[in-house]
Image (tube, rainbow, N blue to C red; front, top):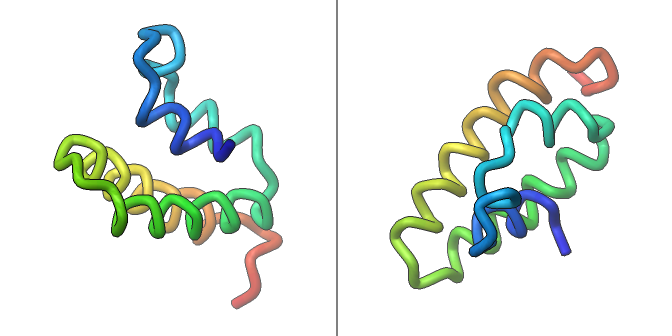
Length: 75
C-alpha cells in the first residue's frame, strides 16, 4: 500500500502521526511522484473530509517542497 495513504488512513497513532517530511525524504523523486499521483486518486475517491484534507496537505507539501526542489525532477 502507498505509505502516504497508509499514514492518512491508519488507526494506530504510531503510523497516523508519522511526519510527512520523514516519509517524503525517504523516497526518490520518481517514487514520490508515483505516491503523490496515487494519493490524488485516493483524495478524489474517499468520502471522508478528514482524509481529503490531509491528502491535500500532503500533495501540496510534496509537490511544492520536495519535487520542485529535487535535483532529479525534470524542468
